Each structure stands twice: as C-alpha cells, then as structure tokens.
Length: 330
Image (cartoon, rainbow, N blue to C red):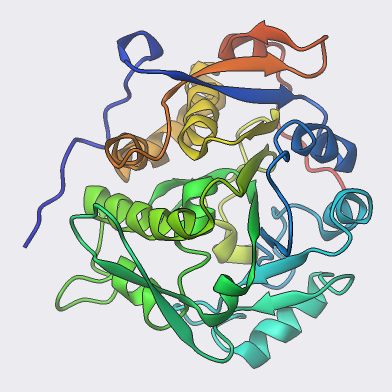
C-alpha cells in the first residue's frame, strides 16, 4: 500500500522553489467584468463544446460566486457553454439528482444548462503516474465536452486545507458515489482520509480529468468571501474573516493555486491567521507539491497586473491596503 509523501504543513517560500515560470494574471476587480477581463487572457484554446466547472453551492450558501455574475459572464463570453456538476457523497442538498436540481433552482442556476454528470451513470478514466489510483470514476457525461473552464471560488476546505482549482476539478468531476468515495476513503472508513493522503488522492483525480482534456483547459480563481470552510458547508460555513483580494487567471493549474496560496501568506498575520491555520493544520500544501511531482504545472510564475498596463507585480502588491471583509450583495 502506498504511503503519503512530503509534509503538507510546511510552506515553501518562492525563493526556495526551482523550475520554469508560468504566467498568472491578476485583477482587483471583483465583478462579472473582472471575470471577463481575466478569462479573456487565458481562453485561446477553449473551443468546441465547453464545460464550465464551478461550485454551485448548497441551498442559499452565502459565499459562492454569485450566479448573477456567472450569467453576465456567460452571456458575453460563453453563451453556448454548459455548467457541469456531480452529486455529493455527503448527505445534504445535493446528494441525489432530484435534490441537486432543486438546489440549483434555489441558488439561481436557471439561466443556462447545468449537467449533473453522474445523473445517469459514471465513466472510468485512467490516472497516469499516480501512486494511489490507476483510474478514477467521473460523471458519465464529462467525456462529451471538448474544453473545460474551471471557474473556482478560492477558499478554505475542512479536509484539504484550501479549495482551489485542484479541488474544484478533483472533487467536482468525480462522481458522487464511486469517485468521491475513492478519494475520501481508507480501506475501512469512508471519511477516514486526512492530510497528505487526501491531497494526493484529490490531485490524482484532477490529473485524470486534465489528461482527458489536454491543453483545452483554463482557470480563473476568485478570491472573495473566503471562509475557512468549503462551499459544501453552505449556511454552516465558518464566518469570513479573510479580506477579499481579487481574481486570478492562468493556463497552469499549479501556478494559479500556488499564487492564491502565496497571496494568503503575503497578508498580515491578522489577515491570514485563520486561513493559514486551516491550510497547515490539514496539510493542504501537499496539493501543490504533489501537482509539481506529477508534472501538472509550475510553482513559479510571473504575476501580471491587468489593472495597470499589464505590469509585472509581486504577491505583496496584491495585498496592499486590503480592507477587512464586509459582505457585499451579489
């Protein structure tokens, strides 16, 4: 039986990383227009039948990307795209297709097609180079799409430490009863996976999806309403205490998630205390090192400011003069 690897509770500063750099774009514009601005920089290979993977949330969840924002974005950028989701393993508002459809209606996801991909079955896809899996179970209809746009609400996560693009795809494309159970389970406990093993299994699931889509994948992460809880917790999520930051975009999944984590660490101690504690106590940083080991991207990047003539900036520039979190209406 394989064992977990590097310590996921130890942050690696940028200057200690090695390898190539990818490009990550940044805007402080938290709005539908900000999403458009970011997406337009990284959408060159998105074509054909497009799937948008985002977290549509539990009923009335307060922290998800607002459906009204996504509606406005899609009307301009991807009018023929389909939002994709899968049912949940945990008991809640989305653990059956019937309940999931009701939750989509409650949360306002009624303006475009939403494909609950495991509503009518599952499909196994290979995991190349993994140590836990040789294949992963996905929603059956995922393979009907040509391109994937991961529109991710960056936040904390109860088990994974943080939820970025890796979590959005790795958990979100795995089907509810087989794939998600594979990721979360030990041999004798459905919810027994913790720390490095969870991060590694989730990352292998993501890699399976990305290997299927090839270079027809792109990423936008929204750093807004960042509770230490996942959007899976809905109204039960911990209160938001981390300031809003902005929106990032890249064609490199590791670079964009790494940049978001670096931005969190660049905040003041008071601003990032809760999020850093959540990430490190769950050994969430293993997501990043394992993505690099699997060849999924670069943990070094050039950060480009879309608000100021596309100048190169640092993560410290992204967190200057942040204001304490105040909930804003969609």
